[in-house]
Image (tube, rainbow, N blue to C red; front, side, top):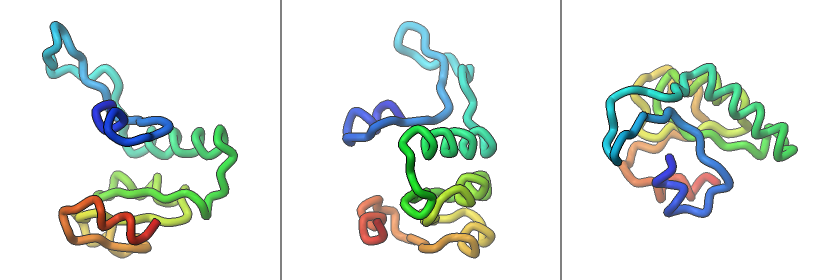
Length: 105
């Protein structure tokens, strides 16, 4: 996520963090962001930025994103891995191209 934040003008990025020593990943996880933590982080950001639920867009691909999707106004499934994700999604994108997301935001 940090690499993406360097490319895009994001206000923040959140994700699991790997341990690095001498600029190499050790394989250990310093911070794990699971489905429940994702949802908690989103609620914190909504509160911090005083957002309305209907103005929040979540992009996900698996059932681990569904708790977070429930906190959003719009859920976009990008190359969904399970049918359950497609059923919950407001929009489904089957192309391997992030630019497709722009059509829905």
